[in-house]
Image (cartoon, rainbow, N blue to C red; front, side, top):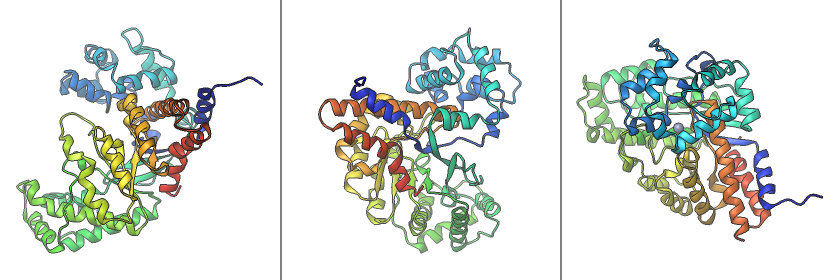
Length: 424
Ligand SMILES: [Zn+2]
């Protein structure tokens, strides 16, 4: 029998695990199949943010990626080319290069290759593409996808389970925004009680349609510290919102209502046995307050909602050590590496290494691409398998783990922990 190394055995095992991908934004397959931008469709996020921080103007970015402005592929390339050398080395740039090469057989993105790459992308994106990319190539058994306010939670159950964002019941700031909510929920919302009823009714409808969790997305726009607020105080703020025709209420004015409604959503999720996914750490895009998304801001919630299950996303990057402490302190806190493999593979590896030593093995979730594209999900999952393999091989070679423990943990990390948490 041919002798094999620890690396070969671990990698072979990790490559066969059918992943539960805990976080994606991949739309229905019909969306990419109807697009004809080729490479330029892959700048909706991530690399686009690095392009802006490298100096590309927002106007140029919008022109490059807007499918409806009639620009030719050559004109789009002319906008991208000056900045591409600066972003191709970041984690986002590397991930893009890797999945373009794997899925479309073009090794590099250059003046000489981009047109052929665009042609191959447009040709490949046909019905059946998701089965090939998500199932056959990426080995994803199921991916949890975010649905936005107003969007249906009915997703293609061959590939996906939905996790809705319900923040919009917490953040109305004007009468017009309340009117929008009324339209979406098809009921009158003129009092706090009616707002609460609409929130609960929407959640219950979504539960009957098969959602597996709810998502808190608020760290993009405010602090993750949620005060305990009385109903009467929240009702007073609601009444001010009801009376306000313009955006004249400040965040300080609105915060009690936001805090009250967010805590209520957590309570409703607990009653229905739904985990709560929380965006923490780096906010996608350019220009934000990183300290708003600090995971330790939620400590009071972790203490008060002891029956909740909080899935703390993105390793709280850059607050990865804080997430380790929180998951160590609290039974109801889970630590999730989604997106981090694409932000920085080395950070993902360092973090996973530290978490293995600090967090119980049932509470670490190891994979989620956080991508708007099936191709990106594939790329991020591939990097996650590689990082996991590298870390576990090192842990075995150093004598910290036995090989049998590393094999067992790989299954927990990439599949079984998510299956247990989300009852899949
Ligand atoms: Zn996301």
